[in-house]
Length: 426
Image (cartoon, rainbow, N blue to C red; front, side):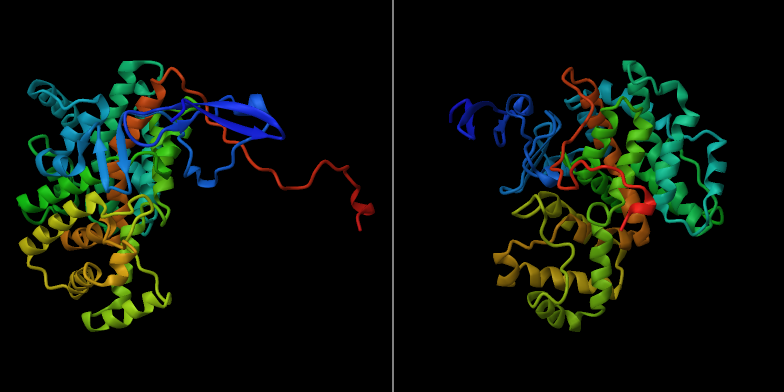
């Protein structure tokens, strides 16, 4: 391939540099295109546009590949821990034992919230959606931790990153407890990240809380599988907000708001609602026929990026079955899910269209089995994705080529016209 792309408009020829990454598609560099040609490129949704250069996450949707800093997601989910993946995403390499010990200590000892912050939750209605609480609470962190919002100070950027990763489980658990009317549970420094979160969600003063290793490991895997996913809508939102120099608490709050959209973070909730719509196993054949006739929407299958089996779904499938096996739950909805999975993996209609169960299908079932209501699913997604957001924000901010985001448009509105007084308008 030539190292330049040639484009001709109205008889005039322009040469555009081609930049090669370490892997994945090459990109045509159009940074000087507008200045040279007086035309814009048009790409709604930016699905064919590389908005940045990044070393964090690589996805090959056709091959079903997801790498974090070069490491396959299935290896990380099987062999690593969420906090180790956090270190990897932030720093680019897996930590040594000493590095991990220090990082683990820093995160663990940042999990407490300012005492006044607990009163902040009382400003919300009890029936508020937990994501509404999360958006407001994370945005408010800068009012409590203003000593680490100088984005030009590398040490303050690091402290903010650690605070966000550490405090997000505490905020998420409080959002959950607040909406169900139970007292807040403070974090404990002798528990692991995921164990601490589960305790803060499910412990009550009336009885001792006992950790379940299978559920703790499942929670940790769910966090790993959702930690980062390249330049998706919420990550791009965080980068765009950060391009103005906004501090990370504001940027992560913007990412949470974007994630709240049903096409992004709400997909696992929609998958579970579809199972509720089906109701019982005997109604699955009728539903499948309805899907084929386009009467019903199939949620939790296929993926916008992955045209093969979502590599995260394979790990989530295994985790899902482990959790269900451990808990021995007799839930009709979970029976529907397992039967639908079996049919989807064998029916030619699904196979030919590559409509494999995705991570949202399995994570929704797993989280329901673990005791989380559907309105908490996106909150857990936000908790896990925080490390990806802050890693992407950090990379963007430290990029010497950083510019404030300023997408252009194809204008199709009225051209210039003169103002007409109201009494003269027809």
